[in-house]
Amino acid sequence: MPKTIKNADTTNEQTPVELQEMAEAINALPARYRDAVTPALTRVIECSTRRRRILNLVQEALSQLRLDMKYLIFDLEATRRERDSYREQLEEQGE
Image (cartoon, one colour):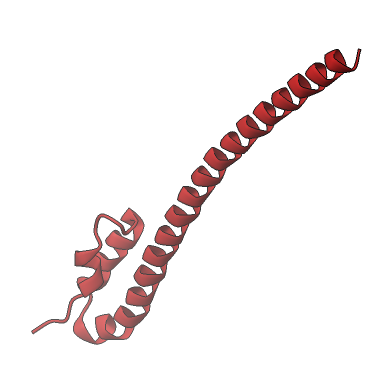
């Protein structure tokens, strides 16, 4: 029974097209060559999937950071307006 690359079938949506094509080409090789190359391809597919997950996490974190920065800038502007308003009130009371 020929051995095929398991991860290529289970991660088709996540795996880049180039790696899918490589997995198909390797699966078409004779068993002795396929067995020699399959572990390396499996590691490459796992690394690619892991990098994609990490990239998605970083993108989500950056999006959250941007949103947090917008809230902080809004709060800062509101605080400055309040400060200026209180200063005006103090100046009016001091006169």
